[in-house]
Image (cartoon, rainbow, N blue to C red; front, side, top):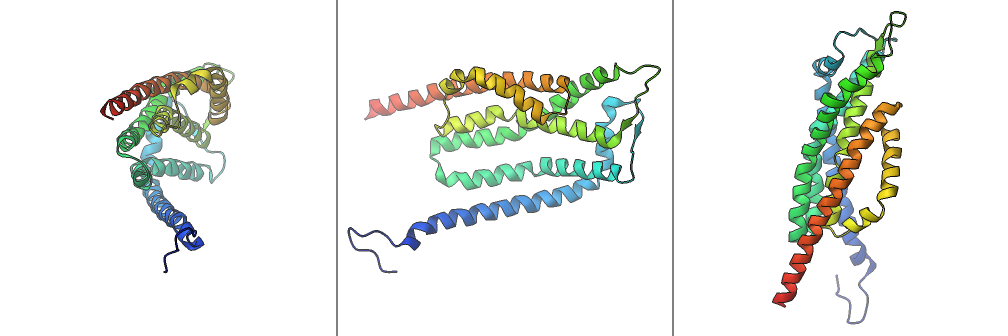
Length: 256
């Protein structure tokens, strides 16, 4: 291709090629993630029974039923999808990192890589917190309304869906500090922004908790309280990043 003369703009094809190149790269990485997710989901379906037994442990002693022939199968499919997502998480993190890595500097690269590595740990911590702390409390609370006249008979489909949704909701909620750390490393988000919008954030947290949890007040409050703590943790992380950035800028100014 003939190079453009001085003062002339580059041909349109030269301008749009980088965009198409990034788009092709993004498409390739999405395809890799989808393939791994589908394979992990199909493999997980073979282990749904032991996974379901594990999830039913907090409600040991209860009798579970399914109300229509496909109920148990649908519950197992949903469970395998969640398990496939969990097992695909390392690949998702890796593909995200490889896509954004060329576009960021060395300093931001270290911060974002650390945040991505911790993101899986935070997700597992959130799901574990839901399973070991929130789920037993929630089950005891709701079963306390039973009596001799009203015996609990729980649908296995609804139970597995309830617990899975709760664990995923808490896992995603625990990613809030990770998202803040990544945005802070890129200079997009600062602690002052979150501090100024704290009242709005608190209101928004309760709205989000009402949307992502099952339709009961107890689950919503139990999700909102950790979210408030994670919001404050995000502010603390951004403050540390701000001090570090100010120190680097000061050192660079002294050297100049």
